[in-house]
Structure formats: structure tokens, C-alpha cells
Amino acid sequence: MTNILSDESVLVVADLPRTVGSEIPVQDFAGRRHPVDSINFRTVGAGGRTGRPLVPVLVIALLLALTSCSQGGQARPGDSPTTGTGALDPVVQEAKRAVAAASRTGPSRWTGPVTGPAAVSGRRLVIYVSETLANGGVTGSMEGAREAAKVIGWDFRLIDGGGTPSGITAALQKAIDQKPDGIILGAFDAQGEAPLLAQASSKGITVVGWHSGDNPGPLTDPAVFYNVGTDTTKVAQLAAQFAIARSNGHTGTVIFTDDSIPIAHSKAQIMQDTIESCKECSVLSYVSIPLGAAVERTPQKVNHLLSRFGSRWTDSVAINDLYYDGAVSSLRKARKPPAGPPFNTSGGDGSVPAFKRIRAGEYQTATIPEPLHEQGWQLIDELNRAFAGSPPSYYIAPLHVVTKKNIGSGNVYEPPNGYRDHYRAVWQR
Image 1: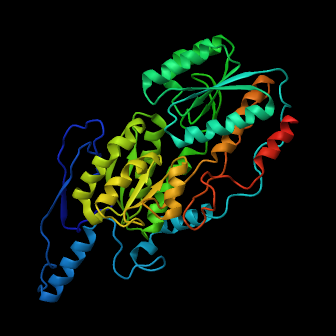
Image 2: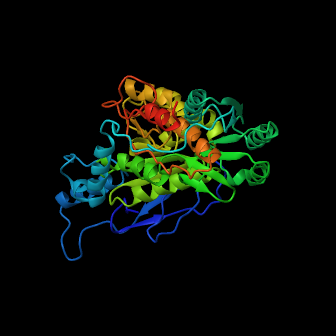
Image 3: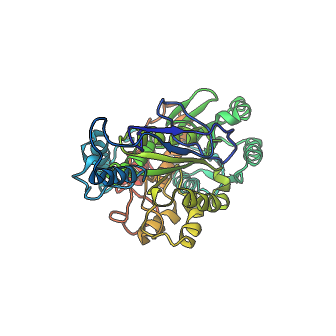
């Protein structure tokens, strides 16, 4: 964490209890985290060096320095992508390299599976149980899985959990009761439904997941044959690096997440740690709002943040595009520039509304999308491997940053790697 005041300043933090949806400010200078909703600064001892007269010019210079530092994320006059103090920070340099590499056109070379079992014969029933269809990522992966199931020759059904814990549990129980061959978990934590997944396993039902664990790969407790997704650690880091690179190492960032979801909490912590590793960057606020209530509750929180931080709020980094669905109305009413600041970036799924906002340059600058339809095809491929008694593919899609410069014409990220043809070849379909 960087001291955004002067070397002779003291940070005073009020130790208040945290409530759901509250903000977690940055660490104090001793490295202690304070789960509070407000942070107050008090400066002491500002002045010239001992034994040297403090002439008016020095007074003015000192005041300008203090003002610049207290901005918490604004670039200093004269800074550019290659000059200024931010450019000297190796963290900033690495952020720029990472963003530039991920911003190139999506990989045209297929790095997924080219061998595997042919389509398992006979009709198979697969049920996709979604956390909520309000989540564009869930919808996209579901649509891809439905398309792939038709190609491979299986029956496909959808049951929506409606975004509530009770709704998800009820939807999963309903799916198990239909005795399918396979169940796809759509963006809810497998661990939270361990008893029902044990029940599914006892009935011989194969389970795969999409964003159902901290990272892609097989899950053992409870048993999930394969959890499909990009590397969440790298996604979160890249989203934070975008804010660092964009601001030339002077970002004042607000993080939006849902701490009730373990994977979202982990991503947000990585975002915070990445930004705090930048010498002259700051995390202004850490905001936890349930994804299911993001559209309804984000506007009021944005009003509060604008009032509290003003121009110090230069960037937002969210674990999902949904938060910006809710933020737009408040930003527009506050007459904030559509192109930013704040510059809004999502380490989320890459929803249709997000693509539209980025293309129009209105209240979202970037997203790190999942190749949603491709991952839907992968879900079906992983089930086919399980049905055939083969191991998982262990495929993890590479990362890509979408901005107005490289967005293209579609509203879903479709890597130009021919994944459909490759899966058809593996399945002999």
C-alpha cells in the first residue's frame, strides 16, 4: 500500500464493524486491514526541513505536492505512458506489457483438445442448472452448451436458480430428481451444494461446472469431473493491471465484488493486492454487493462513492459486468463523461450489455471476457469424456482484453480459433 499523503503524514482509521454491502478501505501504513466504511486522513508536521528557511516558493511547492498526492489516483501533470514517476515503477511496466499482449486479436491457433472419445452413443439427458440467467456469462455458456448438445446428439434442459441460495438448491434438487446422465453447474459454488452433489454422485450422475470453483480443473470435494473457466487468478490480476496501465501508475480504484461467492471474493482480493503493489496507486474502496442485487443496489452505492471521492475515483474494477449495468444511471445523472473517468473495467464474463457499452464508449472501458460459447462446447466435451471413461481435457482458454479498439462487430467474444470444427472432429460429428 502506498502512502498517498506526505512522508510526515499520519493515517487515522476509524475501527467500525462491517456490514453486508459495506466498503473495506485500504490497509494502513503498518499493513493492518480495517473493515470499516469510512477513512479519515489527518496530516501533521508538514513543513520545510530542519535548519533550512521555508521561503514562499518552497511553501507553494509543498502544497502542490500534498495536493497531488492526496488525489489518490490522478496522474501528475506532464506524466505520459512513457514518462513521469509511474513509468519508473516496474509494476506499471509489467502491467503495460500484460495488457498489450492480451489486447491483441484473439488467438487464431486452437490450443484446446484435438483428440478424445467419439460421441457416446445413445440419447443422453443433460441439465444445465444456472445460478441466475440475469448473469450474461451464465446465459452465454448455457447457449454454447445447448448448441453443442444438439450437435453431439443429446437432450438438453435448463433449470434456473433465480439468483437466490434457496432457488439454486431447489433447482439442483429438481435436476437430480429428473435422473439425468449429466448436470452442469452454472456459476454457483459446488462446495455450497455438497450434500446434493453427493446425492447426485450416489445416483451415478456426472457433474461438471462452469465457474463452480476457485479455478478450472477437477474438483474432489464435492466431486465435479471438471470445472470450466479461465484462470481466475490471472483474470483478476489482468483487470487490475488494466487500471494500473491506463492511469500510468496513478489509479484511484473502486473494486466491486460479491463476497458471498468464494470465487468472487478471491478475485477481488487479487485485484486489491495487485493495485496495492503499485507504488503510487490506491484502492479507494472495496464494495461487496450480491450479484443478484447488483443492478438494484449499485446506483445508490455509486452516488455515495461519487460524493465521497469525487475526482479521486479514476477507475473501477469489477468481478462482473453486472455492476456497470447498475452504475450507468447514477454516472449519467452525475454528468460524468461517458468515456470516463471513472474508467470501468470488468474481470468478468463479457456480457452483451458490456460489449454494447464498450463499443459506444459509454461508461465501460474494457472487459476480460470468457469465450462463453466455446466454454459451453467444452462443458459438453468434458461430459462426453466422463461418459466414455476418459480423463478431462484440462483445457484452459487464454485471456483476452476487449476495448473499443479491438471489439469487432459481435456482442459475444468469439475467438477465431475454429473451436466448433475441432470439437466436431473429436466427436466425429
